[in-house]
Length: 221
Image 1 (tube, rainbow, N blue to C red):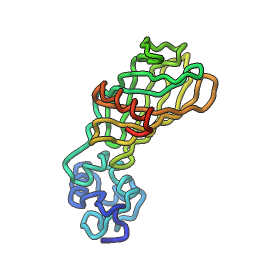
Image 2: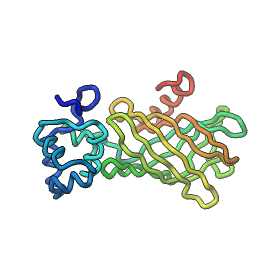
Image 3: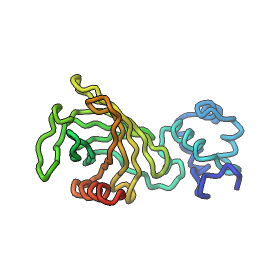
């Protein structure tokens, strides 16, 4: 195996699958090489199985072909991120820790995963539950995640409400084969300070709450 093999010894792609996906995208080897910013001879070697790309190169190939890494690897099992997710966010109000609950909608396009929160959600603090308002720090938002490996998604979010000028970054690790995502958000508070907290997206509402509880108590899901 070439020194350009993927980390951990696991192929980041299948040469045969790569050729099939390239042809499906109506791209020549030269066009794919130019889109990825790599040499034509490298594309030829990858497709023939003579050489394997480093992970970063494989990621650029997947992006150019508008597929995820699992599909490029020819594993036949793709992470399904589309649809409704139950979100939990660790937040602070007047110095008091709380969580907010929202439903978010994901519409993946290749490696990109646009996400939207069309409701402000529910604020949970001190054993009480109440609708989130702008005054208590809630807002609707749009964002996007991008698959950066088989386990990690990075992205951003930004308020869609004119009265709120809030935006930030998202980092998620994929848990239990995609049953939930957990990680951190980093953004600006109303006072203009940089703040951060735990974040969870799960297919099941109870799972989302359970994972967030473990993160708050143990620092792990």
